[in-house]
Image (tube, rainbow, N blue to C red):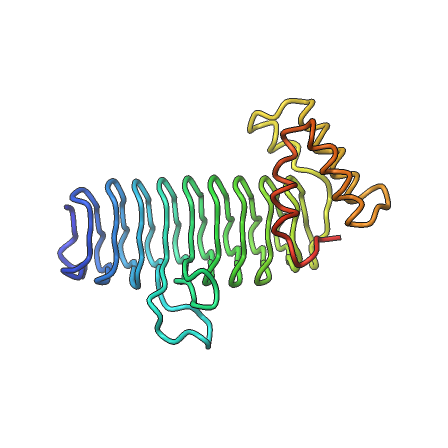
Amino acid sequence: MAIHPTAIVDTKARLAPDVEVGAYSIIGPDVEIDSGSWIGPHVVIEGHTRIGKNNRIFQFCSLGAVPQDKKYAGEPTRLEIGDNNTIREFCTFSIGTAQDVGVTRMGNDNWIMAYVHIAHDCQVGDHTIMANNATLAGHVRVGDWVILGGFTSVHQFVIIGEHAMTAFASAVAQDIPPFVMAHGNRAVPTGINAEGLKRRGFDAAAIRSIRTAYKALYRQGLSYDDAKAAIREQAASSVELEPFLRFFDRSERGIIR
């Protein structure tokens, strides 16, 4: 185990034998870090935090600190980070709260740039990109393959569907359906993330189907309930629309308009 002599690693912390810990980093007693992970200098990892395999955590990050929530009363809530994530400088991830599931969770293969804040009880999927200064308030759900532009701010309890994308400095106050691109303060829809879908292997027919669903939501003058019904009917023969169905089952704040 390559631990710099200036690092402080609690004797109760559980680190795999090949974990590297940089100079002046501090790792608390309830932390678990799996094999292949690299912790840079001046990182603080505390709380009941589990970090998976092959993660790279850069200098000055704070992971597992108590949530920025006045209701928090010291409950043993958790932070869980999956495998193969890159977390750049000055990021802050909080543990969960007893008012929600009690876990702040990030999946696998995420690319998290500098100064990103992930608040208590957020659930982040796989393969996401969060550009510099993206901020998630508490209880936000972020689906797989989402891209958040720099300085994007997301209101608490918002859901962002799979493959969605926000532009620079977007302020997201309501849910973003899957595949949708959004920008502005407050964020509004601007189309589907067609280029991103092409890069991920969606063929032309699948993208046409997703575009048809987008038109039902935003271009045909349908009520939200009627648009959902139309997309559910379309999804019976278009498997690529299943993310819409999962989104409709979870969304409660209403969608961006």
